[in-house]
Length: 184
Image 1 (cartoon, rainbow, N blue to C red):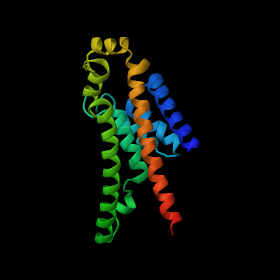
Image 2 (image 1 turned 120 degrees about the vertical axis):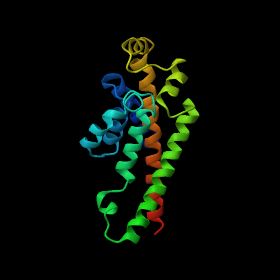
Image 3 (image 1 turned 180 degrees about the vertical axis):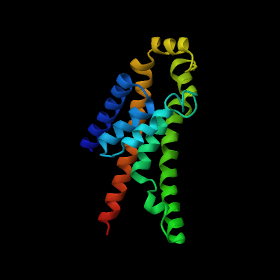
C-alpha cells in the first residue's frame, strides 16, 4: 500500500511538472502514464497533440481526460490482431469484453472529473477553476489565462489529478487481475 501511495504521488507530481514545463494536457497526462507504467508509443504521444485545449483548442473534452483514455487504451484496448481476428464470433466476443472493460474504466474516470470539476469539458473545467472559460484562439484570452495561473498551477493541477485518477484505475485493475490469477 505504501508503494502504491508513493507511485500515485509521483504520477501526480510528474504530470503537474510536465504540464507546467511543456504544456499540452493530453500529452503530459499520457507521457506520465507511459513512463510510470512502462507503456510504449511515441506515435500515441504524437497523436495526443491535437487534444490540448479541449480538442484543438475548442474547449470540448479536456485533453487530460483524453490522454488518460489513451493510456487506458494502450493497456486494455483492442489491438490489430484482435480487431482483425479471422473468426467473427471470437472477434465479436473479444470486442465486447474490451469495450465493457474500457467503458467501465472511462465511466469511473469521467465520474472523478465530474465530482471534482462538474464536467469533463475543458471550458467547464476552466469555469470551475478560474470562474470563467477562455477563447483558446484569442491571444489576449491566452495571456489572461496565463496571468491567472494557467500553466503555473491551474492546468497542471488538473493534469496531475487526472493522471493520478487514471493511475488509480490501472492499479485497481492490476490488483483485480493479480487476485483473480492467484485464485486459480
